[in-house]
Image (cartoon, rainbow, N blue to C red; front, side):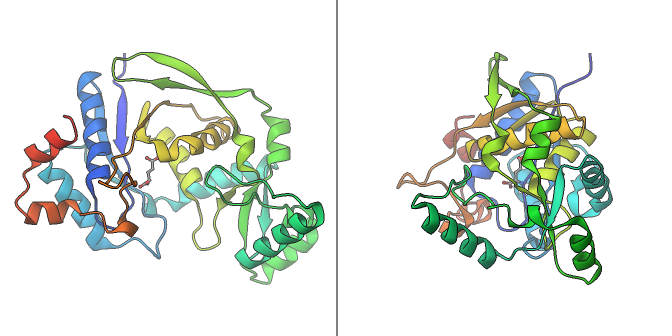
Length: 290
Ligand code: GLU
């Protein structure tokens, strides 16, 4: 039997904190328990926010924690051709369409709909309003003209077309630390017409993550609960792209003393700062329950 494959997939847009340490250590712990492999993947498609010094710090912090991963490390920014190939497959299947809307266009369209209906417009699991579908109505010839004229465009999932092609029911398998598994129902439609290729970068987190998990043969995805809802969308993309669906484990998040999720934006202490303060990797492991 082939070995299970785990991965830790941080984005180099800030310093790693205890939450990242927990996720990385848990992946490595699972890999150890299940006799699996452990990969590191750098998720740096957002070229405006990712920085080489943050990337170097990821390697440094993880090595300091005592982790070892396979070489070479996959860096997403080196694989836009793979994401493009996947995008073209979705396009060929008629399940994406170009969207020229600015954020402001969307806010205004949603406000109009809310005013007309007197009701709140539906939101996605992250709390953002579902895309109101404005560009779904743009005729193909007009869209082609606008693209040729250089108008910036994102590409969105045509969820109605996707639902026709892959009606489901969609589901994935969840696993726990004792190797128990259960089936979980997935509802990708609650994401509406999600962005699959962004305006600023020729991919998206959702597209790159399903392509890479498949290309790297990842069998077990271990990541935070904050990404649990996104898995529903990932399962649909896997179905649309004929990719296998890995098993998933969404772990609880490490909270700060006030009960908030640790975040770069909330000045949670970085591992490098804890290290500079004399905290040892052993103390971090203990504190995180390893
Ligand atoms: N790159 C994502 C993050 O840093 C994690 C992606 C994943 O594990 O699927 O939040």
